[in-house]
Image: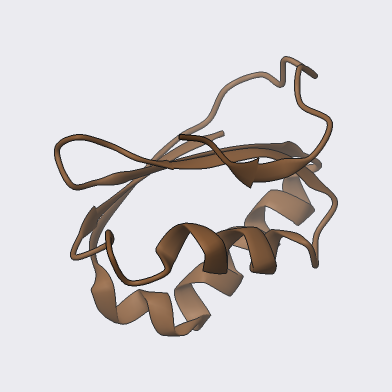
Length: 87
């Protein structure tokens, strides 16, 4: 799953909050700031874990910074071992 978050999502601890929230779920992947000011999150895991992570992000203080959330579902590649920040 790939999620693009738009809004004032850079410079507010968005990536590190996502990493902290992801620790509560069995997911792997990464979160990264983009040059256009958006943040991209790529996560793999069971559907209920992915849904839980998305809901945790929506229920966190991050929600006030998000103006748009674009979700693209895709098949897992199993290429990730952990969830972290990508630079």
